[in-house]
Length: 191
Image (cartoon, rainbow, N blue to C red; front, side, top):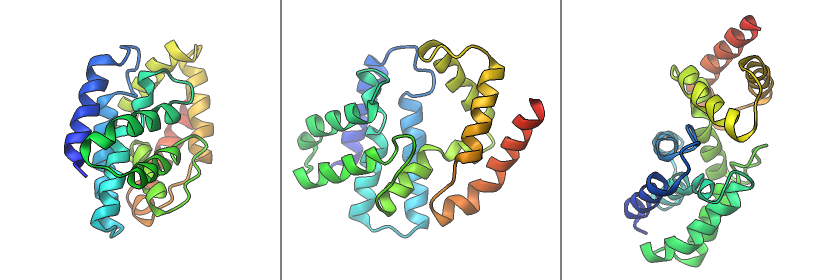
């Protein structure tokens, strides 16, 4: 498996072909999830082969936005099945990558530890200091794609999402949960 080459390929494709309206779900987000997944895999003591599958899934998990927003996880798996054989992935490895990708579908429903890790990596920003910056990018994307009406509506949506969200791994709970709850409090007070 040529993880870095497969990642560079899909990142270039995303940078060159993704519609400009995706201010959040773009190559920067893929790299962000890759970085978080790598840190979580190390902390959760994931083996090398599984880590390679996880990091591949991180690179590809939102590449389905190239086909549009609806059911983008399935589109991401389409990309994985189309391109990963060129980078030395077996059919079984590609299906494992797709299983990891599908765990990120909201509401998140991971089947295994790798799925839990990518879910936590995908929403790592909820408990980070750059939460409000990334949240603003996501809002500007949703205004266009989901016709979100106002920042007030967005704040209400975020409160509901943050109240219902939970991290799966012990590492994410330790590193991100406290800050995530502080963000929830800040937004609630704003309302």
